[in-house]
Image (tube, rainbow, N blue to C red; front, side, top):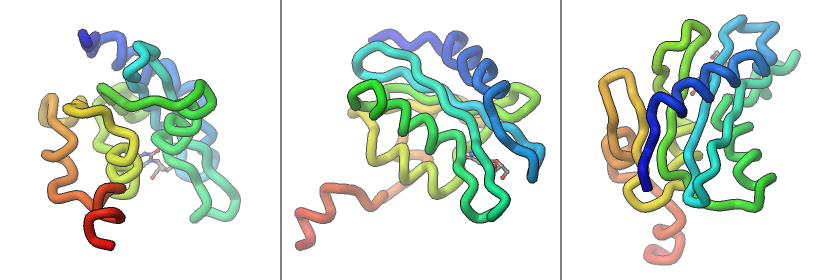
Length: 131
Ligand code: THU
């Protein structure tokens, strides 16, 4: 499947306006291309109970399932200036779970594979293999 990185970047920037960030004032926008060909987005949603804040990737994964599920082919994430942002560690794990084979990410140091940003990851396969 062709990946239009400019479109993903723009979609991630567009998602910034939906961020709810009264505590950090650090909006994050995320966008992904799914294996169905949809472009989905997410933004961070914070909470007065600070530790409960949801990263942009969390709302993106919720959107994936709201639309019936699927796998992520390509992913991009931006900060409030529209610059590429690395998914936090927890969100790398979240993305790993829902990756399509060969999933790519736009990172601060170029296009990378999931294995490059989360090497030797623990995943659903381990639950079977290591039972
Ligand atoms: N944040 C994300 O939404 N995704 C990331 O991968 C990194 C961090 C959010 C969480 C919090 O609302 C704000 O950025 C500051 O940490």
